[in-house]
Length: 281
Image 1 (cartoon, rainbow, N blue to C red):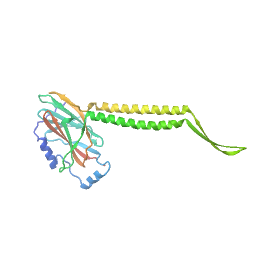
Image 2 (tube, rainbow, N blue to C red):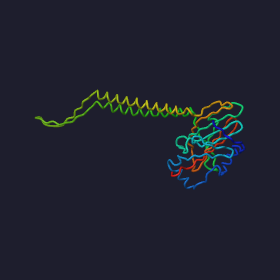
Image 3 (cartoon, one colour):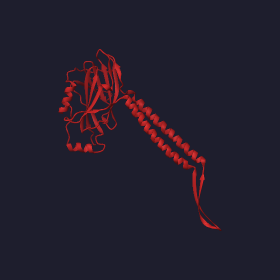
Image 4 (tube, one colour):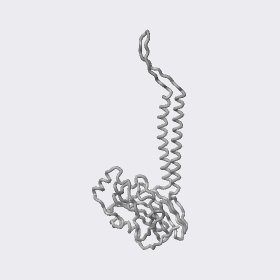
């Protein structure tokens, strides 16, 4: 069980976003050179990894649980807690976050990823870029699509093995001869159906093994999605917790902010993470 002791006295989220756009130091790290930024965007793979850290706002609380740095935000009807699963975000895949909602209002509320908006702010003079949050159904479809692609490649490999198996029964020998009528060379071809059958059986077994492994991996991936946040009704006094996975943004500058706007029980919470270059990259 956890508690967050804070009093709401901050500014409205819309005011906060305007401040972000004006480039207040509280929300944006120090700018680096334009040259380094240009090199970053032109280099393949540059910017794929970011160090991520919370930017705690004045009306928010911070605490730690099992090594996780957590932000807590309390409003009239709801409390939100959020943290990143990792200190380094591999944006080439997905970034993983855990979010917790406690309903402290008097009415039930429905909560899902539809209540969460994610944006990346690269520069004070730019508009925030929308970032996609994957739903549970989308993640299941991704796992199924990955398995289907794996099965196609396994099938292609199988037909290649079958082609080779059809040749496995044949053997060729060459030799020379000499006699009263002269001399020369010869080529002899023999066929062993048992050898071809054994090669085909080996190809079948390999295909079955590959498909079984692909199915196992798919089920493992789907099973790992059990913690993904899904639409739920949260009754007064109850808590809902779940994982969200954020897609790779279209553009991430050298220093950027990842902003979550969370609509919960009529309240709007804003959680800000700083994205900085990883040292040595």
